[in-house]
Length: 159
Figure (cartoon, rainbow, N blue to C red):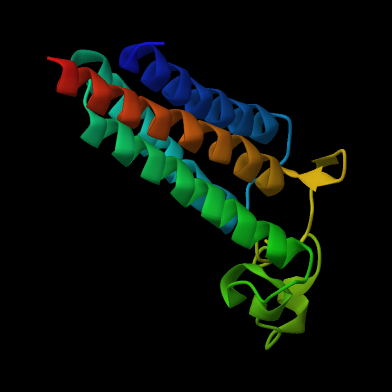
């Protein structure tokens, strides 16, 4: 496989995951803050992939791999928050609600928080939640990115 093909595959993988996230959102699964955090490294990986199509290099491929590892790390952290392995950010977990005005927490209240909780699983398949699947696939894409980096390094050594 060529460096361009590998980087394209990894970047398209990020695009597919990002597209899937938007499809789930359109189907009514509103993202929490940590879900949104996981999207940004995919955007970066897609951008790197576009640049790498024009200028294939081991540095770009390595940066793409780091972007994929970043979203995988956030996905693993988010999974741990969902499974109560560790605490998540107070801003999007059950500990983040301000109950100083109890009526604001009632459904239908104009001042009710429109907060999607990061510690609640909204969808899962085969026992894995969306952040877990993001982590699994992002680790695969990171491996593809780093394979592209090695391939690019070997290609430049031959020339």
